[in-house]
Length: 421
Image 1 (spheres, rainbow, N blue to C red):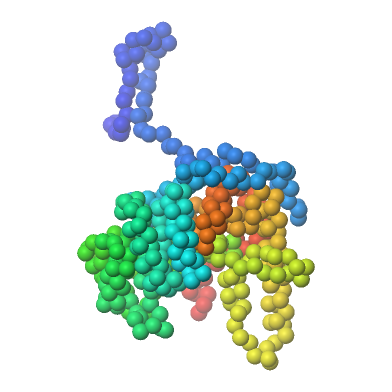
Image 2 (tube, rainbow, N blue to C red):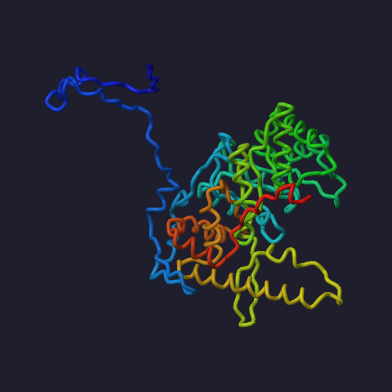
């Protein structure tokens, strides 16, 4: 009988001359394994540091007297900031990225935008996300000017920009012509020699997937981009792109950018982890700050997600059934109740609802990079303090949040084709 061992050394009694009193010559050989022991990640070790809250699982939540989140103005790197591989690539990104769509909005001056970007860099953020769909070409031009003025090393930051197509624009579709022209135009506006990640914003059903993946492969082979990814693609579309890349020997996408917050969870929690495990596509999230203030009958101000009523904003005729109206009103009441309970829980944790929303999103393992936006340096500073809340989100706190939300996504059961016949 033969035994095969990997990185294993056998020590007999002759090798242990100093231990003759304890080990006899007839003893069985001692097997010494020299493989690496598993090491817990820093993210997991944070569970055991900081304050943990004991929760009462009744209707009311009692966390005792927790101090407010300390604000650290002198820290060079924000406590709690981590760097992770994006997807299964070797690109290391900060777990918090800076979305530039509100920074370069019309209401923000150039000095304010520069102050926000400098604070982000000083805090350890190394990823800047651009979107022509939201802030137009002005964002790329202004960001390029600020980078040149600040003199940041090109190796110290990561730029992601989107190829956007719209039926409202003359430049539409995801043809090879449009993709190449869009990337070259972005490079000219940014005054950079390459873009780190080019994201295809929404799939084009009128363009063959083979043409899209071949065009993105050409962009990378020319050195205009290092990686490419998708934004707002369905899992089926992502898998189709990956299959075409494998078939035609093209570079595969490394990331999907999608909305994710307390009231939008299905895609991020059910399908994107599966994409990561199967084909290595990572997850870049946005949404915790896409909130608006709502007024209740008591005059209270609550944080509500803008997309929570997205499907309810359709225009109905005056002959609409009264039952449907009652259902929408009841859903609105439930949404306000959940927002109120989340706000009360955040207050007991010593933070506000926005900071709790950010920390809750970062607590989920599939989120490799969470995009935050700001219209002032103070707003970004307050958002980054949510990183210090992560150690307080114990299992009890997360269970209480799940009880309040009551919207944990569940994968629908498989349906047999025989049952449909």
